[in-house]
Amino acid sequence: TTDSQTGTPAHLTYVPQEAKDIATLTLMARSAASCKFEEQTFWRSCSLQAQRLLPKANLSELSQFVEVLADVRYKDDELMYNFGDVVLQDLDRVECDTLATVLRAHALFGFRNDRVLQEFQVGLHRQMHNSLSTASGMATSLWSLAHLYAKGALPGPSRELLDAVGRLIYEHSALFSVAHSCQLVEAFAIFREQGDQTSRAMLAMASRLVKARAELTASECASVAWSYAKCRVHEDRLQAALAARLRDRALRDSLTASQVSQVLYGLAKFTCQDVAVLDLLAIECRRRLHLFDVDTMCETLGAIGKTGVSSQVLVSRAAARIKHMENKSLDAASEHSLGVLAMAFGKLQARDSKLFDTLGDAVLRGPRPVALRPLRELVNYVHAFTKVHAVHDNLFRAVAQTIFERYDELSQTDLVRYVHALAKVEFVLPDGLQAKLATSLEDQSVKRMGLFELLKVATAARTLGVDVPSLETHVGAFLPTESRGRESGIRGRNKSLPKRRRKTARKRKWDW
Image (cartoon, rainbow, N blue to C red; front, side, top):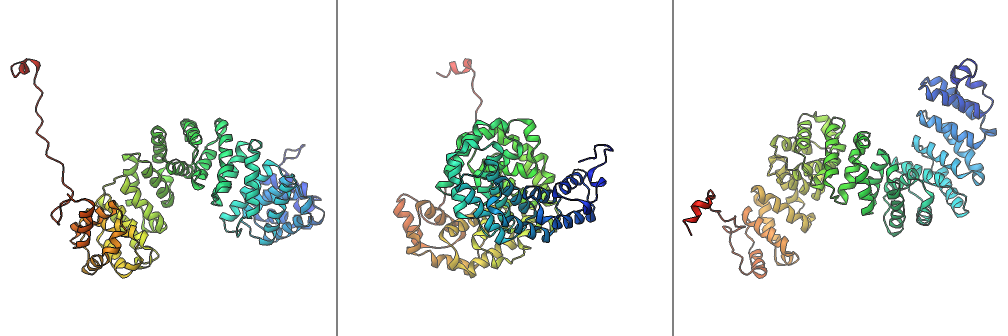
C-alpha cells in the first residue's frame, strides 16, 4: 500500500480518477483505510471511478473494493445497487468465497436490496447442491445473512438454505474451523433456529469446539455461549470446556462488557454449576460496571440472579449506579429490561428501598401508561418488588387498578403469583378488586388449581382479608388436618431452648 521508491502511501501517490482498473483502486482504498484517512472527497472519487469501471471489472476484485468501503463505513447506495446488478449478471460463475465477500459487504452496510439478496440465497443453495461451496464461504455467507436479518435488511431466511446448511454441518462438521463454527452457531442463534435439524448440527459443531477449546478466543467464547443458549441446545461437554477456558486470566481480561454479559447469559441459561468461574465472571462484571448501559446491566444482573451466585459488592455498586443515574438514561431502557432488572435485584436480595423507589418511578414514567401494558409484565413488577418486601405505593395501586379493569385477561398462573406476592407485604387491596377476587375464585376456578397453587391462594386470601369459603373447603379436602380460618397460617418455628455452656468432663462426672 506504499510506493516502493518513495515510501509514500498509495492513496497519496495516485489519483482515484486516473485508476485504470479496480485492482489499483482497491490498493488505494486499502492504503487509505489502514491510515484511517477520512477525507470524504477521496472516498467519493473512489466510488465514482469504481462505477465507471464496472462494465469491465473483475468480480473478485470488485467485491474486495466494496468490502474495503464497508470496513470504513462509506456508504454509496448507487454503487451498491449497481454492484448487486453486476454480480447477478454472472451469478452462476461467481465463486462461493466471492459471493461471501459480496454478502459480507451488504451486511456491514446493512444494505437492503430484497431482489438481489433473494437471488444470492438461491445461488448459494445451488452451489451447495452442486458441491461448489467452501467451508469459509458458507460460514461467512450465512453469518452475513443473519446480520442482515438482525438489522432488518432481510425479510427472512430461506428455509431450504438453512436446512441444507444444517445437513451439511451434521455430515461434514470436521471441515469447519473453529472460527467458521463460531460464525455458523451465531447465525443460527440470530435466526432463532430451533428443532431437531438445528440441534443435530449444533451438537456436531459442539464436538468440534470441545476438541479445539484451546483455540477459542474471548469473543468466540462469548459468541458460542450466547448462541447455544439462544437455540436451547444443551451440551455438558461444551459448557465444561467454556468454563475451563474462562479460567484463563488473560482471556477474561480481553472480554468486553457486552461479551461478559453474553457469557453469563449462556452459562446461566443451562444453570452452570461451576461456582468458581461464575465468581470470576462476577468480578469481571464489577470491573466493567461503568461501561454497561442499562440494557446490558439488566441482562448481566438477570443472568447472575439466575445462577444463584451471591456477589454483594457487585449488587451494591450496581444499585448505587442505578440510584445516581439520570432519568433520561434510565428511561432509555425498555419496559422489559426494567422488569428484568427489578427481578434480578429481587433475586439477589438487594434490600434497598431507595433503589426500588427509583425503579418504580422509572416504570411509571415509561412510554406507555400502565393501563396499556401486558398484565403478565405488571405482575412481574409486583413479584420482583415483593421478593425483598419493597412496596411502591403508586406503582402497586396503578397495577391493582389495571387488573381490576382488565380482570378477564388475567391468567390463573398470574393470579396466583399476584395475590401471593401481595400477601408477603400485606398490601391493602381496593374494595372493588377484593370483591372481584372473592367472586371469581368459585368452585370451577378453584378445581383447576393444583395443590401448591391452592395453598398459595388460600394463605394469601387469609392474609389479604378475602373471604372465599370454597378455598377452605378444597384445602380441607386435600389436607384434612389443616387448621382453618384467618388466624391460622404457616406456623412459625418452635422456640429453641436457650443455649447453655457445655460442661467440662469433671463437672459431668458428678451428674451421672
